[in-house]
Length: 149
Length: 418
Image (tube, rainbow over the protein chains, first blue to last red):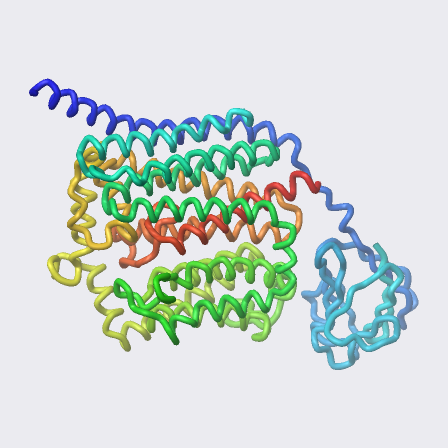
């Protein structure tokens, strides 16, 4: 009787330490496996941003010397009169923050930021935002841009 | 190493079997063997799922599922020990969770279409979060439950899925406007109000949740996830300062207006003022941590029953008592690994929305476990939310599995799609 009680106690102690051991060993093994897995992966991961690149070219401007200037960008581009924009147009018809072009779902979208004198895409007033395609003409103030990807 | 990932599944199963063995020796689970078929079902389906994930050659995802089952098995043995009558329901919830997980992983492509309807997602989230205001029931001090006959659910648990989806969709589309240089206010650069209105709305709801539902945990979680995801999307520190200011104002106002907020705060500052009354829970939890020491009292050999709600919110105290510092630190470490895996998955994604979604899922697990562990150790005022995958609770289990399913689906997408 005493021995059974002793063995039950012993078994219970072994089981308790067993749980603690499994708790620790799982995390150790997981870290070990993951380290080998991830170190192999890092060499292959690289990104390709060239696919995202877009260019806008000044097609028409009052100042003829500006015509033909190209602005290459990825992700986003802001246009306006304020100095903090990516393209600054010093023109009274241009609002401080006039328009912004952003990448949405792998396509570029132009958004008018409630400018006073509007943004024109292919001659039409831009209401809110619109997707851009290669060759689209964007007119802001007295400057016309051509969008290309 | 990838082919050996199924080996990891033996550890959670070992924990489960050793735990049940200890309880049988201690005669805690005596007299019913009804749970055996459920345990067998859980074991078989966990192995099958891991083999399925491994066959798909997902990059990082194959490490996620063993971790999830590891947490769940710890939760299962603790629940079998603390509330034997809830053991079978928890096994059942785990099975439902795994089924939902599989569905999310399989049909991720179709689920992705929902991401286009960002404002509908936002609206769903609002409805879920506001529904307890209207027809909520108070259970355990927080008015955040909805009862349909025999079935109860916690809408905020599902609200957190929608908030991650909404924030990922919203921020990835508007992040350029949000980072646009604009009005300067002292040293903060703030975008126009209409762009930050949804964020302000989430913060407002979080504070309402705290004040009306007395649900500090979920409030902190929602507030935190909005701040983290905005920062991750825009990289602008102005939002963090703005959120902090908003938080401090909200906290101060509610401190002076509402009694229960003052009580919470007082209990947090000095639980020893009233250890048998309002601070009873926290004080007992601290005693449990102290009793556990470094190696713990041994599974099923502690006395965690002094702590009210020990099987849900305070399960970590029971773990700390019975597995000691070593066991509880291991679990915290495992949550860190989970977070790390989530962030790795996010970094491997290519589209902004996927990056944000994966990072959001990882962050929500991290925040949730941080808030509750900080609560039971009195690092933060006590909050009532569940420890993901470990605490007892159907809503929490299912919603955590859905979020884990998103992580696995996202890692797969980027791997095969290129």
